[in-house]
Image (cartoon, rainbow, N blue to C red; front, side):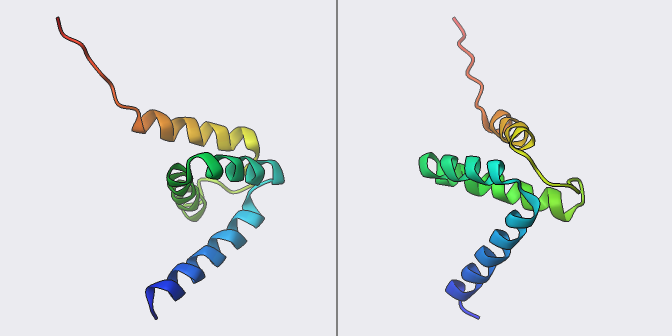
Length: 85
């Protein structure tokens, strides 16, 4: 199977999973973020898939839960700058 076919299959699996596990508001929020920061949304999607597959998330993810996950990811990626005089 070539890379394009694998990518297309993965995207279809991801879309199906998110339709089932995210509320409409959470999917809309993710879509709005995708417009501004597509690379960041890929990170969020990977984390969501990992959480769902490891059964740490069992019910639907609403917008509030999605924002909590996003804040945790953003905090983990945040660089700390220290100025020494």
